[in-house]
Figure (cartoon, rainbow, N blue to C red):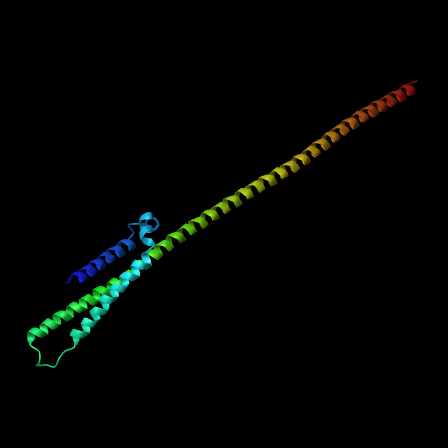
Length: 209
């Protein structure tokens, strides 16, 4: 394998490793988000698009070259004109061109996959932050509603207590008035009873005389 194809194969292995790391639960979206927003990543982020499309262009050139090699060595000549050694050599070159085609194709494909994964991880963490904020806001609203209801119930209970206490005081005052009236009636009845007894005694005394 030549130097350029060795480099492309190494790049493909690095991409496979990155994809495995990014889809594995080893690192949470928060850690990836912090890494993507770090100063180290921001240095490359300004020129990420340029690097991506530049590398994509280079890989595309190698992809077209491998396709050209595949078409070149896949054309078979008429039987009897090629020797066995040259035919084996052509098959080896065809195999290498096919290998290079698959390596380059997967490298280009994984480049788009990694870019999409980075975008999805960032979006996932931002949505997670929004969901947590909404949940906190909902909890605060529920707690505020509970507090308001409790205060309202306390105010209602206080108002009801004041009304009951006022009615109780009125009833107690009415009862005291009734007791005083009953006492006056008893005293008046006692006076009339004494007068009645005196009248009876006086009438008896006159009858004896």
